[in-house]
Length: 270
Image 1 (cartoon, rainbow, N blue to C red):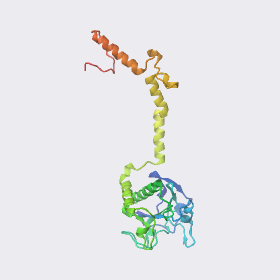
Image 2 (cartoon, helix red, strand yellow):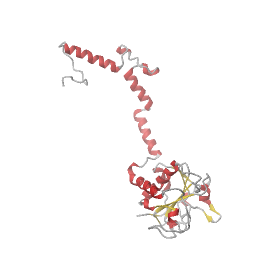
Image 3 (cartoon, rainbow, N blue to C red):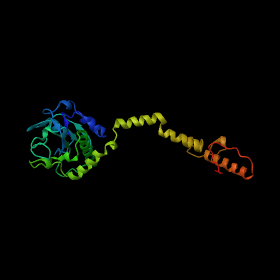
Image 4 (tube, rainbow, N blue to C red):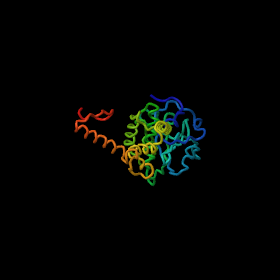
């Protein structure tokens, strides 16, 4: 199974996974032609490690015109969507089930910002976003983590990227996320929708808690945070008042006095 055509859904799929996304102007029309079947994800590092690495990915180098990958993953876990069309990122190489020396037309490239020299450890937030982004794309195209590949694993040209990532462990985590499906993190829009519903249904949480404490503990909760009770109950709290009622009912029952059943109170004889 594979997706056929340009992945115009990239931004939506990443956001649905709960990831931060920046869409670059014109990304849906940027690329070196159109995809055939999209069958996997190729993982890279930028080899720069700076905040402007995306510019090279989008605009290219003197020896290679951009775009050089569909996505750039910043160190804070933000994805930049650069292009939907074919990008020059794979080079020559092979992987099981992929076209030899021609993967650019079949796989999506992710360039993660890292120097690739060992001088920049991978931030946890970036690694997490790397795995979740790969999983979201693979789930969308109906592929498993076996089609999540390091550039160094594919390349026959001596590539080393992405530096320092154990791809076997990486793929295990990616597959776990793919399999999670319904438990995938909610998008920011979905979270806000639920929050708005809760607020509309029960009001502000802090206000509700205060109201409940006030009902149980008396007016002293309103300002002083105390437990002064209610004047209508001779200064007792609601709990103390109920306890006193039960105590007096017990006393009446002990004297063989008729006791009026109160709806909702437990029947001791039951």
